[in-house]
Amino acid sequence: MLYLTVLLGSLLSMLGIHEPPGQTSITRLSGEHALLSRTTVMAGVSRFQCLQSDSGRCGYRLYHEQCQAREGGQECRREPLADFTLVVGSSRELRDLPRGFGQQVHIPK
Image (cartoon, rainbow, N blue to C red; front, top):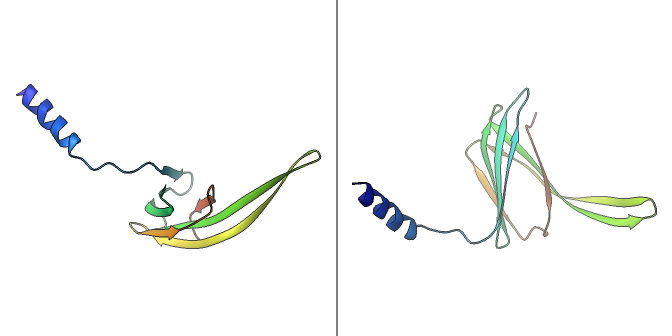
């Protein structure tokens, strides 16, 4: 029975769907309120998912940061790209965001 279980598990994993290489980040905020969000970037498509939030919503602020070396350090400038809010259980896809874009995930008021 053990061998059958191992064989069946191996067969099912061989038939499984494999995602192409990409980048996934999970944001978890805790303290007074809790929030859990997942962002996946794959083949030029960025997918934002609000998984859990005490307020029922997840807020996203997307930006592109450009830094230049200056005497005594770096000078950075943030260019806003998008601001949006998702309800728990929903997702949003955006295409062609700049490579290396940044995000701030927060609980909207």
